[in-house]
Length: 403
Image (tube, rainbow, N blue to C red; front, side, top):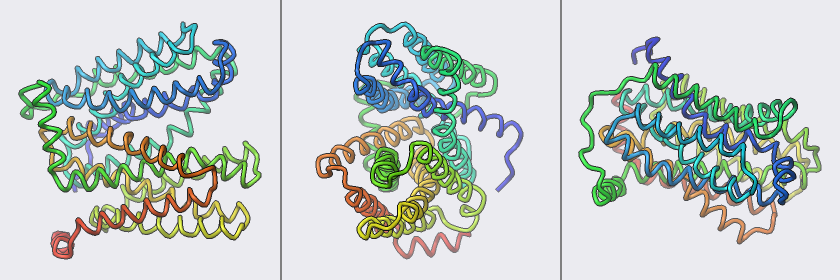
């Protein structure tokens, strides 16, 4: 593989700014929940609804911006989508009722989703398969850093300013992304999708569902994303409520596990992609997850120290950094012309699958951590099985011969 040029690294930095916008917008305002609830005379659980509306806007927005980018290219749709993000961010400053916050957060997500979905499409269109895996690993690495940095930035802002300025900071970051897009992103000259009629868009989405590779790695990627969300939503209960550790200790543990995810992405970009076929990377990652979740379940059942339970929790999170970039690469690879549409359905499927699995787990579980550990193990087992079923022996031999 040829080394990336300076121009390509600048492009990657631009894509990083687009990819990081969503995680920053999700996590930066979390420390402000109590102040927002107090100023808007509402309960914190109603402020939390604004997080749900953001995720809804993120899913719907991706389905919208993907086909748009296939028709009109990358630059202009990104500029428009981020403009929507900036306007809705500034609107959040002036809200007087929590219901308006819900609406503006939905519009924020709708705008930020343009950068996320088009960034994936740009990588898929402009780079070869080996470079694609490396770049998606870099983007996943940033995806691990953003949730760590965002609450810290939010806390710093709250220390000196009112909560409204958290949204000012979001708008400024999006402005920087627009500047970088305008300055460094060049439109490609590839053939474009000719129609944006609803019938044509639905037909294109239908074609994706007919592709075995896309379906396989969208499923595995969606399961991995739902595992991440299950971990994020249940780790406070495991560490603080069941384990009895402080919130400060939990923050430190969360940071360490996030570094584990980043380590998985780094290993994929620097070592694993050179030694293993992408599908073998997934097999390795899901195998580690099955073993880790199984050990976590065992440790919870026999009630060992929380510090021992944290070991398999870390080793479960780490392979997510291997699985995310690899599934993205494999799912989008067959669709160079319709990268935006494929990227849109891939991202929206992750959010939809996570929503459904969360509903299912919440209906079956009353907060018992052993049920969560079993769910994580089953997710790893399903992903491993799906990967193996769609990767027959003759295909493995061919992959090895091509190395």
